[in-house]
Length: 202
Image (tube, rainbow, N blue to C red; front, side, top):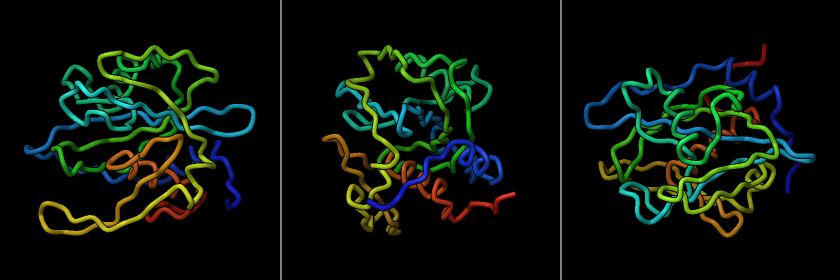
């Protein structure tokens, strides 16, 4: 495994120095937002994931981040991410130190535009998963996710005929794929300082 340097204030700095890609409103897609929760224990930073139940309408059984559809009462997408995180896993908004926003991305199999927000939460944290939406909560160290041995890259064909590079991560007996895997890949790029849209350090 290659050396991995934890993010700390460096990730906050990089997220605030860059301009995230924000996709324009699209009448054919629903706006959604997710929280990418991080916590720091004695040795490492960890990313918190959920596995969705098999009874949900969208993305059933998939590994995901807490989040959901934008509602007009939210006012903005960050509020959506924090509200949904509280409803799904019990993370209180006041317990989240928001580090910044990642690039928007669109889902392939469902018509969503997702806005991810990265936030630090206290450790240890007592989660309260909603049993209707969340089957399990698990975490993975950033150092493990950054290990090339757990990542698979491949070329994926979209419905419109275009092809893109896509990703999968194999950790803790789970397969992280789809939009969640692309968010993880983007986060790791920023931490390593090799993201395409990363602005120079100030």
